[in-house]
Image (cartoon, rainbow, N blue to C red; front, side, top):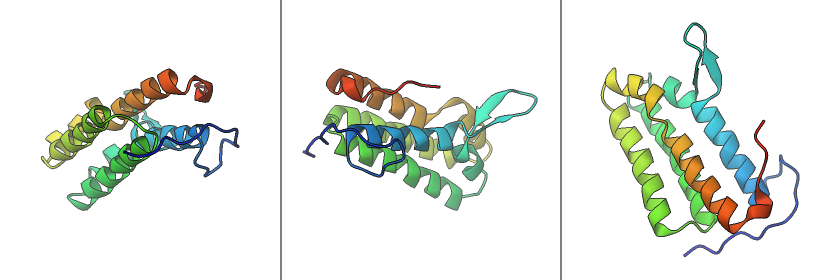
Length: 137
């Protein structure tokens, strides 16, 4: 089992190993993958995950690797095996959906695995490291 990362103060842009830095990196990656910009006309946020999904095979593999990085960071935060399994299943399901032409591209608008995984991480951090909470803007 990974050792939990100690809680220390740091800059929001720090690449440190403290809880606040890791949380900021994970939240930034989730925003990049799921909510980078809003599609005009439908006012629906999309991110790099949906755009990469348009590139057959390679795009889905890159999006999967980026989602897997979030799971890796969660492991380093000390999440339980059950939580990590749920997170890996979210990424895996998103990958399988993305492999289906057209259906996978549409699914990226509705099934946001990285947002689901961020929710799991936030719940863990709020319970086990309440001092590391950040305000959403």
